Length: 117
Length: 113
Image (tube, rainbow over all chains, first blue to last red; front, side):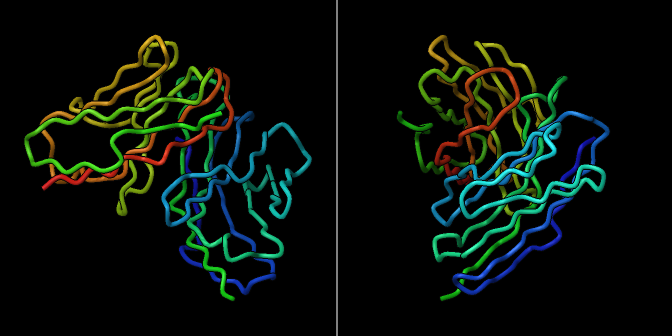
């Protein structure tokens, strides 16, 4: 069974600084997808970034980038130039490419990020 | 394009009752997935529908059921409500049955008393 682990329940960062959120996962699949979702206090889940396992290049989206280490099964999120609006719960999620689990996002427990002025 | 919409946004029910939640996906999206979010268990997958067929189901009792209509709108039903069913129920849609990002609605907050 696939699992996703986020070892940092809470983190804080000063505005304009950089922070890295950790995520590890466990799977026997070779092809899969990884995501970071953000859930602010409004509770709306927002996609931050995605990574296909077959792509070696790390995904980037503006101030957000990932460090994908397939062999280590690690998928960390780096937020540069942190802004107050980045304050939210961040969830790492996994999806297989094939089989009955398709369409099933497996989430970690989340990391609560607070950006301080 | 309008995002995923869910109705109602808030709901209070008593134990033993049943409830129906509705989800309208992004226009053109044919896959709808449902998730339950609680403080204790986190986010858990309930089921996924694609073209009116349930393709995948999570580890939930039979009291939880769903369906999808020809216009891709989906409903989920919970019968014989229990206190533990209190949760935020999230619906997510995506374009095809291929793996890819899902877009979430704002959720329905269900409180069972």
